[in-house]
Image 1 (cartoon, one colour):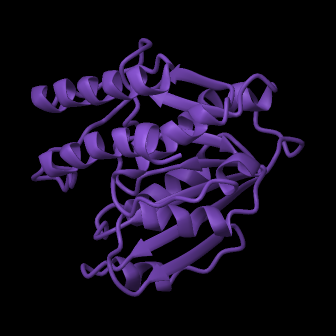
Image 2: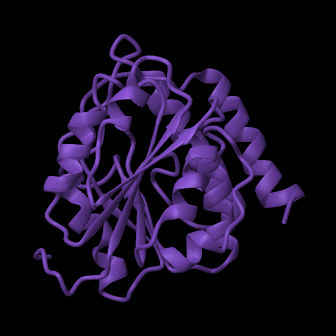
Length: 236
């Protein structure tokens, strides 16, 4: 897909918490992504490491910066960001450097071509490079994806991926209840129940170690299991 001003506006929603070492870099990489036009929505979720100060100094026509007074979690930051998005398509971009914005054309192409309402970027299919990091994270991700698929009756390979793109009218119609990483199983359950046309595309992945700032833990895995049952069985 070539960059073209005739394409729908893409809103890139970036939730961030204590990402002072990467936030300016990721904003620059998003700007360089071969899709125009773009709106960049950064939501600082109560950072205390200087991220807020860096963001406060940024002024640009394509950039919207929103601040939470305290840390509420990734899901809460995304809800704030989606509400401020003005594009016809929304995509989630983590503030670290694990995902490559140059792959936006790959992720949103099924939406642009009218085939999909929602697209998941899978780290576990395709020939793109993947950093080898944690074995048990991969096992846990596979288990959560399998459990989610059993409940939703869809066949994703990577439910927990950051790269999720939506037609904006879809994501704006959904009330997000999960404040933290429970966003992933919640939104998966809800778009599946809406009978959205869901596609998956292979993406690259440059995972971080905990020493490099990775934040998700085994506790978030247990919360994800709870959310899979909550939003597929107990809560409609």
